[in-house]
Image 1 (tube, rainbow, N blue to C red):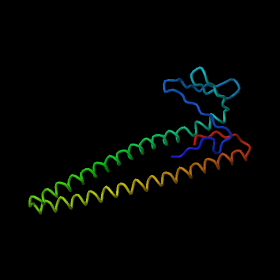
Image 2: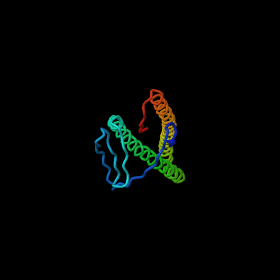
Image 3: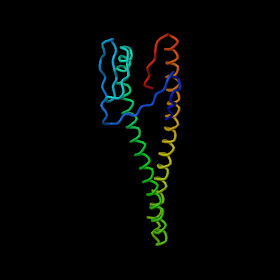
Image 4: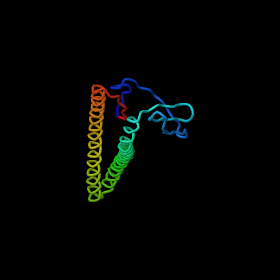
Length: 164
């Protein structure tokens, strides 16, 4: 996926927070909230920002889970493709050995099974390639929609806080 920091936003700030670092959202006396990372970073948020984060958090959480599941699925597919390719090679070598030994019926069966497995591996690879192209297209469309939404928000005179 392609993420373009600063694209479509007024300011882009990178901040890496350690997994063990405490993150706390706490109210302040002015009707907003502080988003605190440990004792070193404090970000002032308005009530609108907090509401916006609340509204987006379930979607972002679901997106992160979907991304993790997709990465696992792609990894599983490539492992399956590798296994299929290795099995095809093995079946063809064994079929050639069977043919050399005069076991033509078994050799023909092994060649046919190897061809079927090779076709399946090719289909898996084509499907993954198509899916990856679709993911890239969706990623671009999402970036464009997020930028358009931020521009519309700015045009309406509101501040924008985006998690896309």
